[in-house]
Image (cartoon, rainbow over all chains, first blue to last red):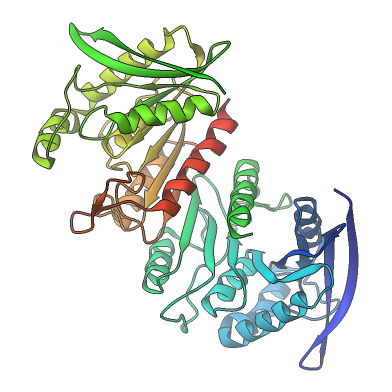
Length: 235
Length: 235
């Protein structure tokens, strides 16, 4: 499938952001937001947009930090996500503004929106659901699972969490708490746990077992397949 | 795909059993054992054999109780599984004998074996893995998750457990314990949890929320898809 890509600036609350969009030729397709990991939007997320386009979707790697912002160390990354982790309603508002931006793109069928994300971006994808933003479903890849504190009585978007069982940032007890949160919110939710798998399992650069981040080819492939099945169900 | 079916008797330790086999036309195919639920081998399991044959596998609905034995009430079913639940090594031996039986069937490529199972049969499928029987992988549909007490240091078959999060017979704490068991055994394991889903979610007849058994069309479809992805990875 022929795929076209472009980068473009957009503005939220007076601040400039830069997204990367990849779309198949032809009529507008369902739009999939890709929420970036804690470093910011990088070639990793852009590649996912292209991979989604090859599957027949319009992938948009969104930007939550601001144009050109890309953390260079764990410490910088931690600082970058801190305001969002500490103020989840603010994060949720920014995600909603990004969804509106994506819906306006010519290559996107604005009635068909989903969000995926990786690590911190997984948390973002889950918060798209938790804030009942205008999306049919969300997929978290090794996302942080902790509740935002404002989970509604009823979550409408479908939820798929793809999770490494040995992830030190989301323990089995966190999975239990997540299950309770989603169940109480009457969500259509799934969690796929991959054994022997740590955080960041989709990132071929991840190789820091002491920190808990290690690439896993099986979990990478299985989770991408699970996402495809999920998107096929949505659209 | 044209599918042929046949029922046939077989003997283990002097006792007669009856299996139901469904196979596509042509060369021998990977053999998938279907382990029955607590009532015994029924049309439900036979239908799964046919469904597997339509996917290109030779499905064999095996018999663990003896020819013609089919429980008619919860109490009868409970009595039927009791000897196996109380003596897991005996269950594991019987499963191994069934695998040998399946490998000998003309429609089966004996080098390619997997096992699936439902409810009690899910426990059986997991015990195929736990006993390192001659199978490439196993899939449990709403299986009981409790460890047999003889889990080896290393489980070789790949393991996929498809699980209703609200299953009262396998609670979130049981999932945690299962994760520990599988992790300690260095298994290649996955567990897919379906929210808002009880035990017996694949059985269209299940409709007893007080007992914890309720059919769920979404989980039924998603779990069957997950099994297909898993089998595609194995063979």
